[in-house]
Length: 135
Image 1 (cartoon, one colour):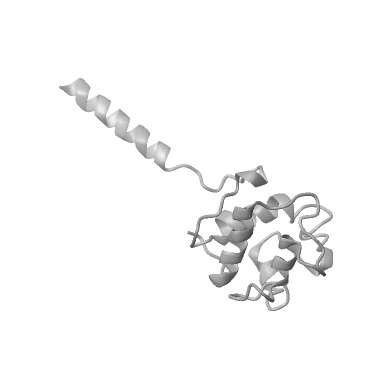
Image 2 (tube, rainbow, N blue to C red):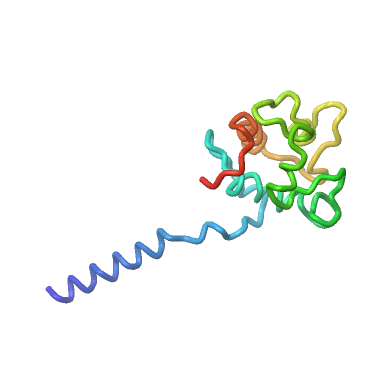
């Protein structure tokens, strides 16, 4: 009986450690970023994509700020609200013009295109208010 209780305690402890994974680990491949249908999280979806494809040296990082746009954190994009991102407006948000490759906008990221899921995710994030959320 004592052995069964000990084994049960070990299994519960192991399950707790597995379920408490570290969500702060950065994603290393852009194709690993999958957006949910709703409740887009800036920290879990938008920023990791920016970190891989945009906020890199020589582009939209804090030092270079190509087109005077820093995408290394939410503060950088927030400073360009109503210029690059207009919350709840996917027609006039110029960020979408670039990532969707709309006429008259430089396609971004220049070296690759985003998946349909990621494009929809950016649209949904803007429609949900383009907030800095941790969900």
